[in-house]
Amino acid sequence: GKTHHHKFVVKSSSYSRLCSSKDILTVNGRFPGPTLKAHRGDKMVIEVHNKANFNITLHWHGVRLVRNPWSDGPMYITQCPIQPGNKYTYRIEFTTEEGTIWWHAHSGWARATVHGAIFVYPKPGSSYPFPKPFAEVPIILGEWWKRDVMEIPSNANLTGGEPILSDAYTINGEPGFLYPCSKKGTFNMLVEHGKTYLLRIISAVMDEELFFGIAHHKLILVGKDGAYTKQVETSYIMIAPGQSMDLLLEANQPHGLYVMAARAYSSAIGAGFDKTMTSAIVKYHGSDDHHHQPRGRPAFPHLPPYNRTQAATDFTKQFRSLATKDHPTKVPLQVDTHLFFTISVNLLNCSNKPCTGPFGKRFSASVNNISFVMPPSIDILRAYYYKIPGVFEKDFPEKPPKEFNYTGDDLPERFLAPSYGTKVMLLKYNVSVELVLQGTNVLASDNHPVHLHGYSFYVVGSGFGNFNPKLDPLRYNLVDPPEESTVGVPKNGWVAIRFRADNPGVWLMHCHIERHQTWGMSMVFLVQNGVSHHSRILSPPHDLPTC
Ligand code: C2O
Ligand code: CU
Image 1 (cartoon, helix red, strand yellow):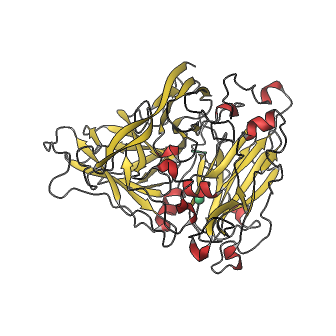
Image 2 (tube, helix red, strand yellow):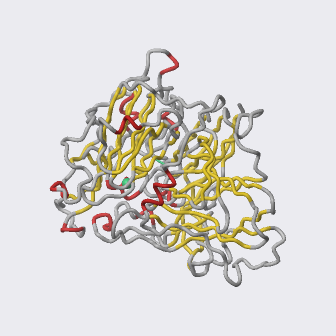
Image 3 (tube, helix red, strand yellow):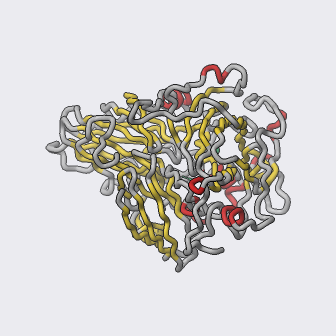
């Protein structure tokens, strides 16, 4: 493969949206940031210069980083942050991923504006498992915040009932013509009648899942999270924070303008989330309407209502991997290690800080009832590699501390307080793992898009209610389960995933809903070295930032 060199300068730049200007963090002054392109088998060297006033790290979401956790990016997990004025070089390689993935900041809430697409083309000489599209278009779903997102993690709102909300959703950085002062910038996608386009869709949204669709057009799903899928024809998609999808769009409608739009799907009851819609225009070449906004009665896509969990599930349950000779499915059939993790939103008594949350408590979140605490001034990877004691504990539990009716309506555990800790789970090199992620109704149930660093995994089963270890495994798909790296754990339900722990390193797993992650919905796998030279973590790079 080829090696591509890039220079990323993280700096603050002024942008105007929703009738006012503000400084946001950008890469190379761009929002969304630059698109990276490579073929499978290629390498990339990205020199990141921090010219901003914040500590920064970048993460390559969906890239396995084989034996190289040093380039993975999550702050205080695999590296100390790049401090203002400093630089760090990330080295990544596209070994098995193919399709659309993305990169984003992994420090505080910086990823709200510091993110971009990664296109991974097939190896030179091989082709897509579908007819070659006429053109490829990145569609990055995001948000615009009037407030300073970098202040949110330490903001009092985290303790309170007031929801943490953006002011608009965006398509390619633009709120679209339904928002004030946003007509001119609205993203226009020009198409030619009769051609097929590959939409490379990424959700860089912080806190909500979205429904997305294009008026009068069918979409054909062909990939997810950097792996191909069997084709699924659909009129809408549901995409969660962290996920990416490849969709074919056939421009087969009469000449004219069609609205592309997205709005929230929120599974949380009563959540005070943003119900507004972001929009863009699909415009047929030769349409005589030269305005940015459709005149007369623009055609809008029919998106499901915001609370329609069934519509979300109907879409996601169709995912299947290709399972062909060229794209085989490598789901482990034997399981060495069975894990069962509950993921919960909790309430916590406040000790000293004033608490403005429900019942005078503050929000928290947990995996197996442990709310994750980041080490304050060193990363876990370095502590592990250099055997520095006292940074983390190796006793992350294989199952929750006690059994209860996880998804019951009136749980006595409603006010379950989590414990706190920087705990990792050790995995021996190359063990095959089955992990059941069980959503709970401890405080309130919600959909949780869970992302695992350093791996992709196979989603072998999912369902509503409590996982039944006797019956549910009988219905697993071990033939063509989808290969993903961010899986939606359904509201009041569970998913079962399988992977082989063949990538040594320190790998974060967390909910990609940023507020849940901030509240502690994270844990860390420490995959130990194997015996052979090729199953060990690479040596640290010489320019690794120090804290
Ligand atoms: Cu997309 Cu840990 O991140
Ligand atoms: Cu979550």
